[in-house]
Length: 416
Image (cartoon, rainbow, N blue to C red; front, side, top):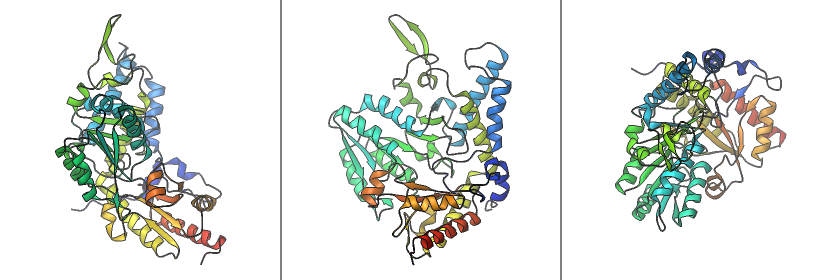
């Protein structure tokens, strides 16, 4: 039986920010790929921690410290269940997806990549999944390969297969492009990489908030995502890693809570995942993330995915009918392979001008290279692009407002 459609107008009632006018207009927020808005349930959970059981974790033998520890560890179990990662011991808390990917490069990568080895990524990656591997390749005198795109939207699987013949030590790819919206067949990509002997790292920043994700089914070795893109607070992210890899990987940071003993002659590490979490962690962030997951599970991830497919299709149909508008990424008939991201260009108008005019109408969109310069400048051959991105609180009226704003841009710039 198909999942019932969600009602964005009801969902918006949980988000106080939508009660605030922008430039005298209602706020139309179309930048959730950058960061999502936060429901009061998440904010209340964080405030409740500070007001009622604020204490450090793992150390205090008193009631509120024990409660803080319990809530912190419970959130890891929630995360593990949410992405089918097994137990919470496979979940490491970091600041964001960027730190998670850098952690893999600086720990596992430093240990396992040697001179002459290959690392494989793609032309659609976010800088967070490019720069750490560039730095690793430079440190180790290794080679960083880029799988090209086919028709500027999907990884060219023929080229990818050939690049796997270099036997890369690490294959690191995005699950969903933050510019094109492309949903990669990450399970197939990971399977091919594993057969070539590679360790597979997945950037899931744009997938986990928007669709059901099963890291065990994907078969990857590491998987990274951020709380702030999935209704949670900033400053906390997730690195999932297979237990056997985490156990044999040295920690990146040293200090409190990541050790079992310290002597003048040396130290012994704590069990996973705590050996990777030095110092006082983002306790309130973990609690907020747990509340965000509870909220998303209450809606249902498949319902969220279905809603975003519907609204993305509506947006593509509406914008593609406007003369001079160009949409980047998978075409209209391929919305099942596209996330809720729609990047576009308007002939003769700089995306920054487009964004400013949208803002005058109370509409928040993104303009620029979206931290994906190789994709935007070398593949799409654009200086920058405009981007709308949708979430649970967006509906067709938001798309209609964006279409009206595009028509206003055309009128201001005298574009027919």
